[in-house]
Structure formats: structure tokens, C-alpha cells
Length: 235
Ligand code: SF4
Image 1 (cartoon, rainbow, N blue to C red):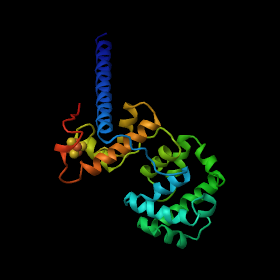
Image 2 (image 1 turned 135 degrees about the horizontal axis):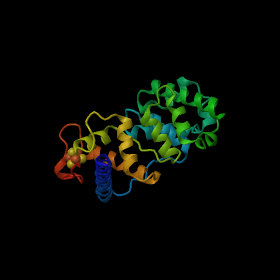
Image 3 (image 1 turned 90 degrees about the vertical axis):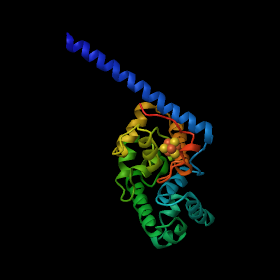
């Protein structure tokens, strides 16, 4: 009997903390949104362009990605049919502005091979796959990690999958909302447990965290006094 009461109390306390955490996550979103406004990510005219951008943006800034995508667009290569047939050395030349161009050309070729083999070279077929299956297939591609796979799921396939990056980890841990040693999956779970599974909310939230990270929450010397998240406390 006592154990039952304890169990109920524990569940009530757990519910209380889940509720408080949810409030805090929504509070962060609101503060960031009020400060930065809508970000309308991802800048790409087609899902295929978003997918290419997700690979090219690894370890570089978006300006460089734009230049690389501009090169491909300029010669009419931004389609699966054309780009996947391009010799890898030529592909590397076109995407040179994005940096690590030989590595990234190889990653794109690996991705194209998976799309060819698993989805019969069809973007439509790939984007119609279930979230779990598509994520698994993306992660099976050498050079595609969780952040790139989830960016493709969220921004190209419009799935409610939260994208985690270094800024997300830094901001949340500095506010004691997660443990410093949380890994990608734990941070993703934290958001997905405390937010409605809404792709447009996840889209905006990730973009806003990137803005806050770039502008205020720098690795060293964070600009807390000017930051919209100043004063936000953990639970
Ligand atoms: S800059 Fe300071 S207030 Fe802003 S998110 Fe980072 S730790 Fe928080």
C-alpha cells in the first residue's frame, strides 16, 4: 500500500518536472523567436537542392555552400539524373567553394549510390519512405552522420525530427537543461519529449538556436549580457 502511494507520488513529481521542462523549452523558443523572428529555413528550391546543401554545409558556412550550389545550378546540374552521372573529379570541381570538396564529392557519390540502389533513383520514392527507414538508410551512407541525416529528414522530407548541432548542445548545457556529456541522441530525445511533433516548429527552433549560437553563445566569451536567453534558468 505504501509502495503504491510512493509510486503515485513519484509519478506526480515526474509529471511536474516534465511539465516544467516543457514550459522552459517553450520559453526558450519564444524568446528566440521574439528576438530573431522567423528564419524560414531551408533555403532551397527543391528537396534535392536541400539534400545537396545538407551534405555541403558540413564544416563550412552557408555562403560557401551557396557558391557551390550556384555553380551546379549555373550549368543545369542540380537534378539527381544529371548530378549522379557526373564523374566524381568534375563534381569535386563544381563544389570546390564548399571546402573539403574531394571528401564531399565522395560523400555525395555514396549518397547517390544508396538512392539508386534503395529507391530506384527516385527522389519521390525516397521521400515517401517511412521516417525510420529513411533515417536508417541515410545513416548507412559513409559520410552521412545524424545531423546531416536529420537535416534531410526535417528540411527536405518535412518529418518531425529535431536536428541537433554544437550550438544546441552548448546553449542547453550552459543553461543546465541537459548534462554536459549528453550525446546527439539524448539531446534530440530531450526536444522530442518536450515538444509537439511539428516539423515547422522543429524547423524554426533549430534555425533559431543556430542564430543564438552564432551571434551570442560563442565557444569562448559568450555575449550573455545582450543575449535573448539571458536569465533563463534550468529546472
Ligand atoms: S550567450 Fe549566455 S545567455 Fe545566451 S545562450 Fe549562451 S549562455 Fe545563454
